[in-house]
Image 1 (tube, rainbow, N blue to C red):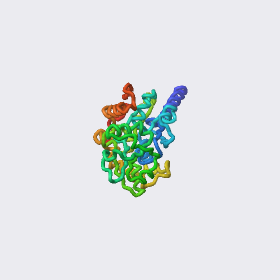
Image 2 (image 1 turned 90 degrees about the horizontal axis):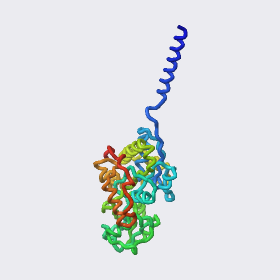
Image 3 (image 1 turned 135 degrees about the vertical axis):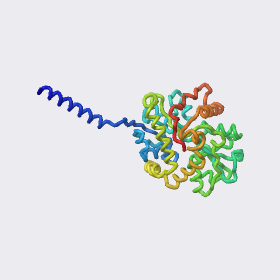
Length: 329
């Protein structure tokens, strides 16, 4: 009898201990992900910062760290070196990485339109008006949009001058134009006393997505469920940011103290005005969506511009498995 009671107590104690352990174990484990951005924190990263600031990532059982980028940061190298899990990328860059044997994969495209544009003085109304005029272009654009502009509008290298990421030369030469993101550079130009004509490349058929989320194939193999949650959480973050950017902006300014409220407000207004996040296929298929057809057009442009060999399998640069059932704008 005594032995039986002892056994019963042991079983009860074991049961209570097991119950306590179950109560202490969360319903689902939190996955950690490190995201590297492609530039200093700005409105163009708003959806990521908003998802962090408002607890959206946490709601999806994600512990996300954002590492701010800059001009000397090479995201592809950081991915390959295991320093980050995700990179805010660009289609041309990802396709070139695939060509070079780096197994990078784009899992979402949060900018349906590349915000890259040509900014001109007010007398210019169309891209055709720029033929023969000086255009300040960065050297990196030689392997992205400049060959496309030359082929489409008949521009020549003789009218191109180096762009050093300053609007001063443009302001000094009323017959010039310059490259720039419509979400940022026009603000600096307006501060200089000129309201520029803004010609968005995407509205003329320039096809790449921008502010994409890029990872490595091995990360997809090891953290697929976490990546799926990250894409949906970030889509919610962008929808929230465009509705009320204050929480995200507070974190952006914390990472980048030089960023002003006026600059951020300008960036958000431009994102909305040009439909950068919510336009295109996102309007009907959800924020962050991508399509096979769009990726093929991008690859075709690169091949036609002799930036990418036709032998590269462009389908290795992206997957559509994570861009389903995304929130509509």
